[in-house]
Image (cartoon, one colour):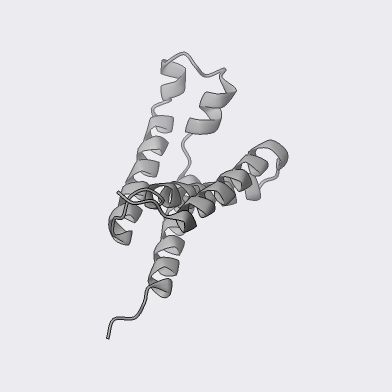
Length: 124
């Protein structure tokens, strides 16, 4: 374990951005697609803020985690748990399965990996 102020500040900025999207933006692109793109970056940064793990391991974990959440949406878990009227549950777990969400998650993780490797010091 180690604390990274850089990743922590990115986590805060991304969380506040996601919060603003959830509260104030009700369009057909930013909220449904860009929000999903950013959420995997948010999760990645939050993990990297406290754990010193390799980029690809964290990226793959976050991608698999996001796929798992999407599969729970496909199974309609919040309805089966009887919490489908909960705004918090719908915000955290989402409403319904969507292939476009899967694509947004993949794009977000690809962006993370590309940026991370572009910023890594070159090995001589």
